[in-house]
Image (tube, rainbow, N blue to C red; front, side, top):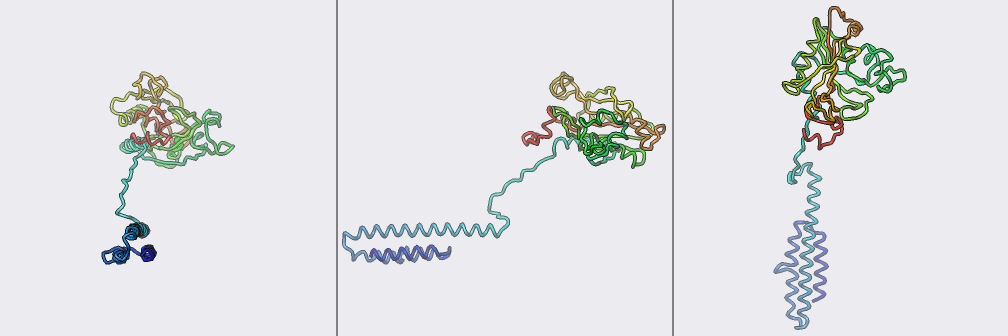
Length: 340
């Protein structure tokens, strides 16, 4: 009888090992069912002596457990194979749990840029764009910035050529020259874009930043028009009653010239690290377009006048979102950006 059990074990395990899913249930019935082969062998136990029966019964129970385990393991293997084939066949398994997509949003700086664009478009301005690699003639010379000016030094500007003719633009003011040379009068434009200067990095400076230049050329344009326009823009961005001040300044391409400050959003004018203790943050330079610049572009300064400004986009964003360090805008720290 022991030999019969051993023969049954070998036959059953071999059949189970090669069976498919449909055959497994049939094998279970064949070997372990009421009329199965194991039951048939156990019926012969009556022929054994009383001393042999316990040992044979123990062997039979071990064989039953071994066959049941083999069937379960084979069924698990078949299910795994079936799943792998299904995943290979289907590009999307709808039975698997989904993942909710994480949506991003615009950078806070570009939110402010969109605001400014909307404001100026609403006032009849056009948006112009240009290359970041510029000729010194457009970046300096035609803006009345002659050779020898400090801003043209290699210590301040990123040049590509040894003759200082090709450079990374230090301002988008060159777009004003391109516009005056190619567009019909009157002209109302803004020119946003990246600019590059050899500035040391601190809370309000960076060697790469964004500037928005604006210009109006028409008959009868005055400094009052410039101040009124800029005050309107600032109030649109920061809210009605925003405190500004205009300080006399000098720019080669405007005359008279000024700088415009806004009261520090961090300390309310009391003085803090963000405003370097001054209570004010410079946001732009402006002035009336210099007659020599108009003449150089073929515009009669006796008939036409104009104003221009250049503002730092990052500083406007700092005021809009109460950011106290410009470096945060460029670091791409998700913990910072998710706040907006």
